[in-house]
Image (cartoon, rainbow, N blue to C red; front, side, top):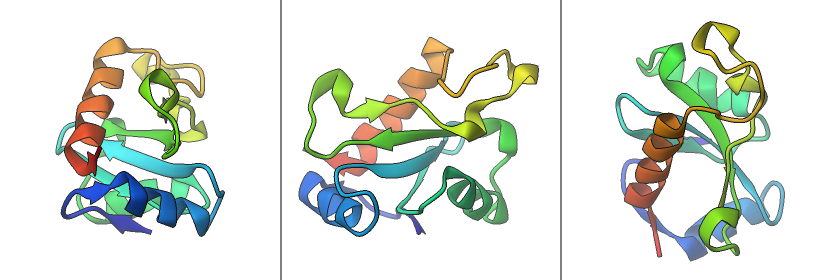
Length: 113
């Protein structure tokens, strides 16, 4: 479980995924601070890590990355931590296109290739 401090390659991401789910790795982004935490069994663990490091809960969104996939199949915007009716997101999926875009930009910043 870590908050990335520098960019990693898809190969490094795939190696991290092998340690948990094989073809997928769980991630949480802080869309306000531009942070990316990854590599845990639960999104909630990554959420806690970011909260302990100064992030605000309303800025944290969970998703999954599939290192061997391309395009739309690379990011899956699905996590239990995303269920928050007070932010107009009553499902596990990230519904707001602006938040999805912020997540995508953070991923592009930290995951090379």
